Image 1 (cartoon, rainbow, N blue to C red):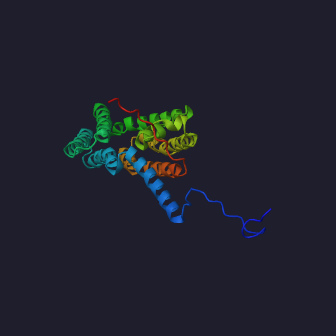
Image 2 (spheres, rainbow, N blue to C red; image 1 turned 30 degrees about the vertical axis):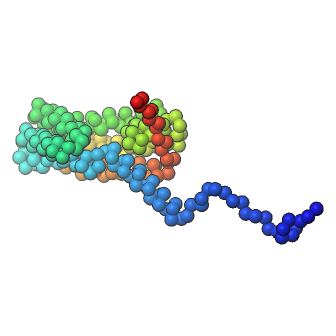
Length: 243
């Protein structure tokens, strides 16, 4: 029996695999890409900076106008006028009207309540009721394993609803993010409803403006952090069209 080349004590050859070893630079680049994708997904779902402005600016105009004039109808029409202006600007730029129209409807309902009752604080009542309903819907969706954050982000990521049946880690992440939204966004009605009942319109209005961005940005940040550690989305298969 002959010994292999190199003798009995020759070192075994290293195992050779076809899988490339990821370098630290490649890992950092992959993490950066995942971070950007998660951030872009969250921002796109809420209309980006323009969407945030469209849904917040009318409330600022209302309380600023009311503080100066002390006239409910004047403040309500000023807020509605700004909404219409935002819609026109988006039309001229051929941009989506989804967030602008949501602002118009919200302001229109609030303006109707305020002018009909003659009480400026009723401008904020529909929004407060919406906040409560939104939090309840989020909670119910999480309990029913149809977390709303996943429903909103699925079409944007291209996974649609594969996270429910094929990606349990992604379902867990969306459920966790949805509960985070319940807790964070639930702070607004908890803080603002007592002020509504006191009738202090100035404090209610300015505090609502102050709370417009911080809870929303915090909820978006928490969602981004959760998605960073979640499994990547499984893209939904699109059936080929028959030629």
